[in-house]
Image (cartoon, rainbow, N blue to C red; front, side):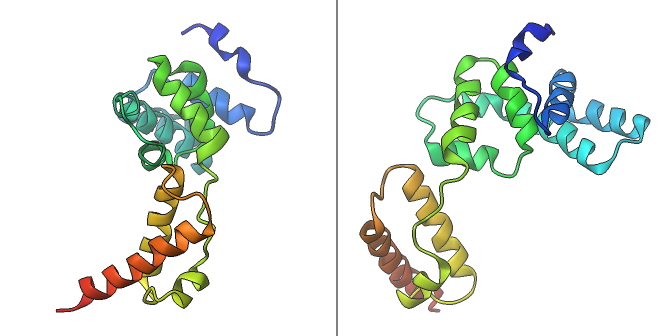
Amino acid sequence: MSVAHLDGLTDTPSTAFTWLAALVWPLTLAEGAALGARLNTPADWLRVIADTARLKARLPQLEQSGLTPSGVCALLDGLSPDALRAATLLAQPPVASERVRRYLAEWWSVAPRLRGSDLLELGVPAGPAVGEALRALRKARLDGETNNMEDEQRIARKWATQSYFDAQP
């Protein structure tokens, strides 16, 4: 691996972990775990190492044509930001690294305009249905199916009705 690809790294507090992700990029999950055990690395190092391998395993899915922003988020949510930053520099094919870059720049922070309390007022039943509705609204917003609060309220009302009928025996 050439370090020329890493020109995008700057001196930030997380740079060391991004460099770690770049260094372990060639390793599988098992090899990364073995390295972590051998070096007795701290938990935050182990997470970066493991997430880097997990991300590499998802690259074929990230390059699929027709993958929606919510599909990208489903693949990348919860992974270490440092592993993601390394992937923007090292992942092949370029479509995968571009999708990771867009995730970091645009999609990871997208959230519904409505809050849980708003959903309860619109009739979504308290409990797990609220979380499910929030995830559905985030997906809709990521994929351009909602443009404003009214769109989200319409989806939430539909969700509330559907959830009610799905819960009935």
